[in-house]
Image (cartoon, rainbow, N blue to C red; front, side, top):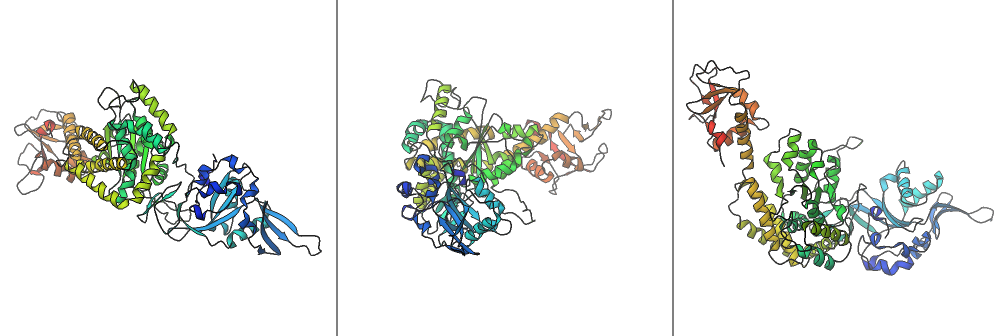
Length: 621
């Protein structure tokens, strides 16, 4: 198979509009859809010399007048030809090896004009590249170096390089393509992927990356093979079913106007966490679709962008840089990159995305952040919800053995299958949701409503998590109705309910994780320093080296000084802490509504204090 996928930034038209490039493979090209050519052409198909790229329509192009002569496309390349004054025949000098101008292109904002070229290198590999027109202005060496790097032979003579600039700038092609550097939904009807475009539109929109980033989208095998051998047997595997449904769910977020977020599968080594990600990744591509948390904040922006309106899968969270993990988690869930400047000081366009993140690791987000002495607040844990990898059946991540007699063998079989069959389910899914978009939205909302009604007792943060779980369940059910998964109706919902129950068991049915954290923060401080930093009222002989306040034994109250308490509350704000303590009746205060308590005790050296009840150390939600 040709290895020109990364160069392939602009696609072909549908069958009847394909450009004739190579006569021996014309029949093959005519059956291909947008962006499939690079992934389908075999080197054996390109058996003729590289001059075959110049088809009949190129040879009939009129010569372009230039300087003292003209530029002409010939069978063996692009030439600058000057007629001799003395009748000795024209002087022919090759500008570059055979190359074809396919079309012009602009982005969806009608800027960033480019010219699309195609050529075969000396190994008969087809290349297609969009040359930004701005690179032809001024110092045009950069685009020529890029052409040479991709295998086009360009003359080193300056006047012939100038001739190439002139030819590309003035080529009369009228064909116009629209490109975008953004994967995902466009105009609400078209879904653009790096390797093709889905949906119907009167615009010819294709993907063109600004950066050289391997996207790992691809196909191998058939949908039937993937469904029957890999996916269908996993219908009753709660974690694997849920992971597969997550892979489908990202494409629904924008249609349903639901925020992004993610799930983190946590468990000990060799329990099957990575297998769950590889199985989910097989919807879209090979196992290389799963990325590693060992990356930078800049790189993760690019990864999120290439998975926009889809699923991003990240393995081994413990390998991440703990100092950056909180920023990366927030950034991925919030769907917005960092503000940056161009070399000339202008603001770059901020990268945005909406994704469903599926992560795995042996440690939780909170555990890793604590190693760098950072606090993992409730918002982070809601954005990246932890699900135990262990299904509780003494089989690791599996609920049952359906492909082998041991969990280890079953994991090995699934790993092998994900290398044999992948990508076709994602293609079928995008064809389905673009073709039946309106009915997909209606059905998805009904499924979400049903899921939420079964959990109508959840509130606050738990409600947000439940809503995301419902989207995952709906995606799995819709993929089943579309004939993609091979599961029975209701299996995706059952798997999502099991995973949601696991999250609830760990974090509480009320979803008040932030309340728990703040109350635990103050309770933890008292448990550690109640005897050493609080002067018991009436005990003058007690020696306190670093006083935080007083303890009124009769009322079981810890009296914090106004300024001291603000410092103890960090990293939470004082008002946030006081509000939660009041709501849980763990703070005594005056009837005037102020959160502080007025004191009339000569043994205490300040007039007002924050009076926290000692029962906070025994408080049970």
